[in-house]
Image (tube, rainbow, N blue to C red):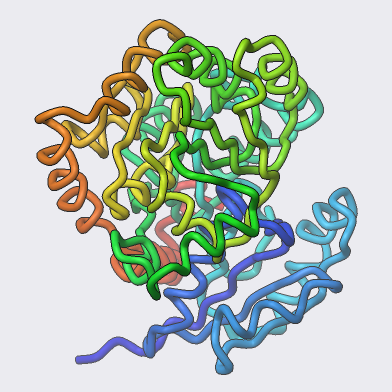
Length: 391
């Protein structure tokens, strides 16, 4: 017997106008959920942010632009205004995709936990955010009806630190294989995009927000060591400035080849596949991530990948990537050199990368999330999670 459609509420109020990281996860997941006939979507947005969502979630979704724009007011609305509104909506489950949740929700709640670095590495975050998100994660662990973790590593760390009462579902991100592929959309279109960004080939690419956990100053130093052997190669840092971005500026200013480091700032989604596809190497040397999607997208484009050993990116990529110890400039420089040289192992790594990336799709991720939603709804209906202290 076919299950009835899941009437799902999703909080998109934390997604910025220029999404990265968890914001991109929310956008891509909503796009995949909106394409499913077995999901009826209600999407909560900020009052000034109603226009973009219908194109993402489709015309059948209900977009409610009800949340205040300013972050402190938005967080207060999540606890006071959103529960009242949820009580008047015909929804089965509410999904909070970015740590925080309405703590007194009238409907079952699923919360996504991306990583536990607010506990393990508070120095990677703005000081004011650390107690807020520590509390939010602990609250979700004790109050949510189900928890989504984006990797096994995140799930294991959550169990160790917060002892959640809710069931954990490990649901990886996906890759949009229609966009991230070796072939450009039309002949010459990639180079047109690079021209608009001021990027010229050949280049090593970093893609992501410039923040402490990404180890970008160390990447600049590693590139500086090998740049003399590759006279034409640039280092392109494609991403907006996050907290701690001044360290990147100091690293570039102190590099002998700093003039060959290009900072594009935030790049629009349409430019991302072209940047990945046309790079000689994609370097993603983050110290730790919940998932590290740019690494998989690079593999899907057939581009050599350098990333950090002992991280979720290295676990995902396996032998398709060249790895360096997190934070080690020496090892990172050696890895960049190996990737730029190519050599006989490069074709095999490329084929392995295609195989790895093929195993991840947003359709599969949406299916995994739907399992969490249905479990949360059924557990709440049976009263089992309430009895265990789930909310």
